[in-house]
Length: 196
Image 1 (cartoon, rainbow, N blue to C red):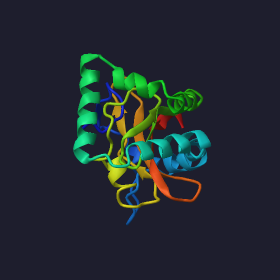
Image 2 (tube, helix red, strand yellow; image 1 turned 60 degrees about the vertical axis):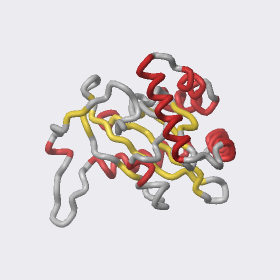
Image 3 (cartoon, rainbow, N blue to C red; image 1 turned 120 degrees about the horizontal axis):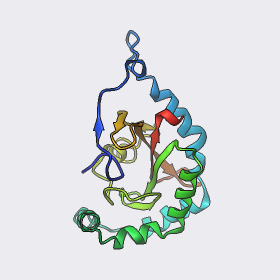
């Protein structure tokens, strides 16, 4: 499955050396703390709202007993619709109030947020600001390194250059907690590092 959550994003790895300064014993790229801070200060509060939490909780109830086979079928159907430009599932998702909300947050980010979506506890999309390449994130690192292993850390993926926009982008994902601090889903944002 595609790592990026939107179509047309293919990446090249030739990154500017100044973004990856290495210090002895510490190999974290320079953009990581910048992205982590942005997610903590800006993105997490956007997600921790009643609208988003309610949408995730409702889908968790709706798909409580969904099997992995069912999730794969849903994902294949979704991706097939995109390939054929018959966007029935996509339209249903984009028409949700939570998706409208995520789109307004993306639009208000002054170009920093390129894509914004949240999933349920299985990794199935609940709401999305744009068309994602797939519907099920449960087999991808954004889910496996956060929800699946119980991590409360923000997972920040490798930065890559978007060939269309020439912007340096990364995806950041974190577990969404309900009012009782129970993990209920995952939030993912694609961030244009150059816009931070």
